[in-house]
Length: 347
Ligand SMILES: [Zn+2]
Image (cartoon, rainbow, N blue to C red; front, top):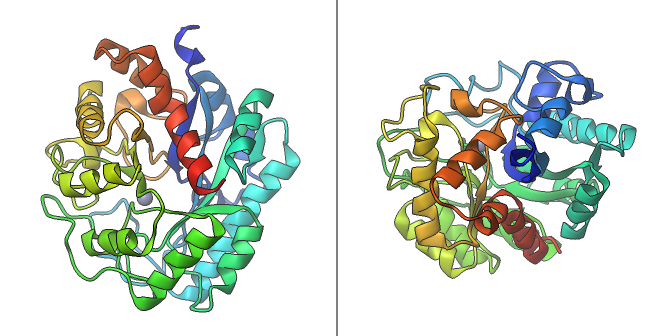
């Protein structure tokens, strides 16, 4: 096993922070000491999880939003005030964690911080906002969150905000499910470009994707998606979208969620490694070796049994080796591509 754990992983998406809020663990003790979810430090050390985007996701209040794990496919807008409270609570958890344990977790504001965290043996965290539900039209909250370390933002999760329309979870179906960004959404994207905040395409519908492509001049990125040609889920990217991303030096972090990677679209955790390799092969074909990375969605969705938490990346790396991926390509997918992309976007 020694050789396998040498591969460090930078992961495009986890939902640890919203789970910690749910678990009433504002200090993030469960992360450092071990918890029942999919992301914690003891398993990170074993599995080579050395960095990633830590998502803030509003909607914990069950009165506000249905359980995203449930069968519901369309999600209503949530109250912006409640969303802001949730957003700040999760940002605060990440700030407290980084302040309490600088030996174990760094909040990274630039790509160089990620490299430094890895050298220090600390997990490199990039603060990500998955849905700008708590941001108002004046974008004041964005300025404050940026100062707190926010470096990545999705204008929407899979529900409407004042900025645009999220993509509902439907299978099989096209991601072209309705209107895209609003005028406020276009201003939000332009401001993210100006600040150096990555705009995440993951939960936008197809119209929103093209709106971001038109407004932004940055690389087109999805932190956690898969290939629509393999699994025809609305959350996945069509070949036309992937080709546009390739043209713009973009990147896709492969989502591990069974409902997004299984060709039958079923959330069945009895999902073998070959299913994920099929997506990686397709993404590599379209995006090239610099455009593919990982974006597990740990703590946010149903994942394969063989890849059930941050301790299990070596099983996926072993599957890449078995599929004939060379060591240099594996390192690009596991780490380098995300860090190179972030250097171009956040500096
Ligand atoms: Zn997501």
